Each structure stands twice: as C-alpha cells, then as structure tokens.
Amino acid sequence: MRNWLRVCAVVVVLAGLSGCGVRTAYNNLDWLTVRWVDQQVSLNAEQRQLLREFLDEQLLWHCATQLADYQAWIDEMRMDLLAYRLDRDRLAEHGRTAAAFGRMLTERSIPILTDLAASLDDDQVDEVLASFAERTEEVRVAVEEQSPETMAAERLDSMDRALRRAIGRTNAAQKERLQTWADAVTATQPYHLRQRMYWQDRIAAALDRRDDRTFLEGEIAALLRPEAAWSDEYRAVMERNRGLTLDALEDVLELADQRHRNRLSARLHRLNSDFERLSCEGEAPPELLAAAESS
Image (cartoon, rainbow, N blue to C red; front, side):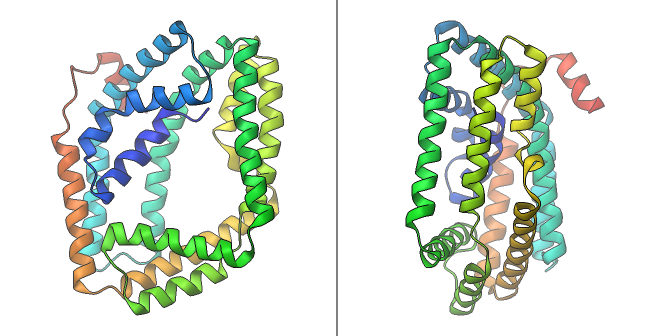
C-alpha cells in the first residue's frame, strides 16, 4: 500500500498549481486516503478506525509543524523565479528539498503500514496481492504494446500539460525544446515493470511472514525506498533522464516570456496564500511538537 503522506505532498502541491482548492484537497486527505486504501483491500471496522486515528493525528502534526516550511520553500522558488535564478542547479536544489519533505512523510508512515499489514487476514492478503498483480499486468501490456514513438509522445504530452498548468500555453520554441527532450529520454517502463515484478514477489513473502513484526517493518521500510533496490543500469538511466529533464526545464524557462513568468509567480503566490489560510483543527500535542523540533 502507498502511504497517505506521500499523497498529501503530491495532492496539495498539484492542487495549488492546477487551480484546485488547496484547502479543500488538504482537508479531505483523510477521506481520500481511506477511500484509496479501501480500493486496494477491504478493511474491517477495526482496521479502518486504526487508519482514521493515524490520519487524524498525522494531519494535525503536519498542519501544525510542517506548513511553515512548505511556505518558506514556495517563497524561495518564487524569489528565484523573479530574480531569474531558476537555472539547472536551483531546479535540482528545489527538487532535493521536495524529496526531503517526502522522505520525512514516508518515514512517519512505516508504523501504521506495519500495523495494517500485520492485521490482514488471508483473504485480505490475497486481495492486496491480486490488486498489485493487476496493476503489474497493466504495466506489462503497456510495455509490450507501446512503441518507442508512442512512449515519447506520451512523455511530451504529459510534460506539456504539466507546464500549461504552471506557466500557461507553451510557445513554439518551448514546444521544439520539449520535443527534443522527449525524444532523448530513455523509456523507463521496462525497468519499472521488472521492479514491480520483483516487489510483487517480495511483498508476497513479507505478508506471508506478517506475524514477525520486525521483519515486516523492515520490508515495508525497504518498499518505501524502492530506489535502494534499483539495478546499476536502472539507476544510470534514471540519473541520465533526470539530467536531461533539468536541462530541458532550464531551457523552457529561458524561453519563457513575461506572461509565462507572471502566471507561474501568481500561482506560487496563490499556493502560498492557501497554505497560510489553512487552519488546524485543534492544537498538536506537545509531544508531537517536541518530536518535530528534534527531527
């Protein structure tokens, strides 16, 4: 199972850049997460209550202790944009900041995922594995049926849509640069399929030993850090693609006109304002605040 905290980071930031209400998305993350988990495995009443209690506590902690850091990060990005400093190095630095936020959230999800996994009965385990296998089969079919040209076209379309949400419609020079990027990037779907097949077997083995909490917790922690199990070839491909993407984004921003920059600046400002207006229901317990300060 994925963790709600990664969903939190992704949904809230994308909601802001796409124009969706950040407060609406953020304040409904508990419901959205429970609904998503229920689509992967049919939780019983006790498991659902356990998940809801965890979500309530973590959302309170996150709102009370983390949003100020998000605001500072968004402000920094906006200042870099306005000062024309969003070059390759700064984009990479902002990416590392986002990744650090994600790692913190991921680590906090390990105990609840372990509790839920340990509580699954045999039928629920079969349901989890069937769901994982179904998604793996979808990836396999896509890898076998899609040509390299189709994969490149999908990459281009996905990037162009993301940029339109952030900066507006791309101009001809930007489109040409993005086409060069899409053609140069190495398709990762075949590697992703092999990784999924590896994790499918490893998850099945972990759930078969779910009565051993120490072992189970270690496997879940490893699952949430899948890059540690990448092959050297896959790691090299991902690093090359990352470099190509940073180069392309730097060029796209260099080719941006004032309209593009104004739109992105306004979106970042609006996202930050939405974070500022978020209100936490209640106050975080002192022990949570103390833990946050010492982390």
